[in-house]
Length: 301
Image 1 (tube, helix red, strand yellow):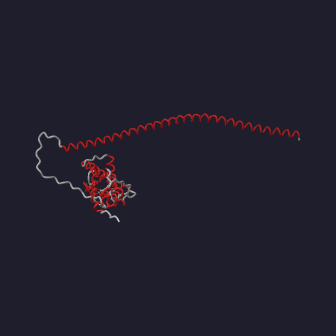
Image 2 (tube, one colour):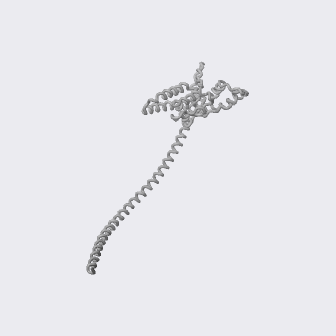
Image 3 (cartoon, rainbow, N blue to C red):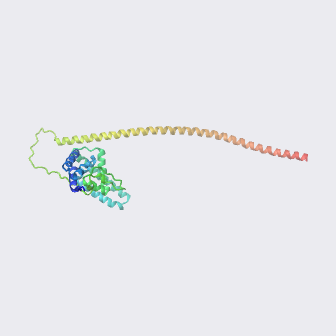
């Protein structure tokens, strides 16, 4: 009978791996699996999945901005408890507040990822925000996010429970709480005065370059959306012109039909008048015929 892997050991290894930079995950996982070769934990570690970009950003946020994530989860729990007795207006207001909070934390998540060498695209940011929203709406999703061991993002409908088992690295992750990463305290050492002709600070330059790269990416996305919108407008305009042309043709046809109807109506009036005259003549001829027949019968009788 094979020995069961120690879940505590596996969770400790997972905690370490999912806290690494995204590019380092796979080589670090394989190295730890080799270290654990021959143990029950080795195959389990080897099967740990690399997180998606958005899932890694959420895991990063959980470790480095623990207080903000806790705030989201606390507010989400309060909203879930309060929503049952609220009217539609109150629910709309709470939904608006929830969106503002998740949007603000997503903005911080993008900045945090940039600080750790990863530029977050708008599409990835949308997945991050959807995952944070799911954590506010669904208790199970909240536990998955707080574990810091997400491998894929989450989405909530607000109706059905969120399926979280496949979104975390291990089944035991759902009871795990990621340890926060505390910033290193600043070292105390003398800093020489900068020379008068010193250039710009390198860190500021890198931050500016990263911001420019993000802005360029956002601009490219906006231009793509604008191009798509312009094409859609042109498509609908062409459709509108086609429908307008068909409508104008129907109007012309209606005018022609109304003229035809007027002419046919006039002919119908004439035909009805002729029929009336014919009916009168027929009745007169019928009476005359009866009188002539009676006169003949009298003479012959």
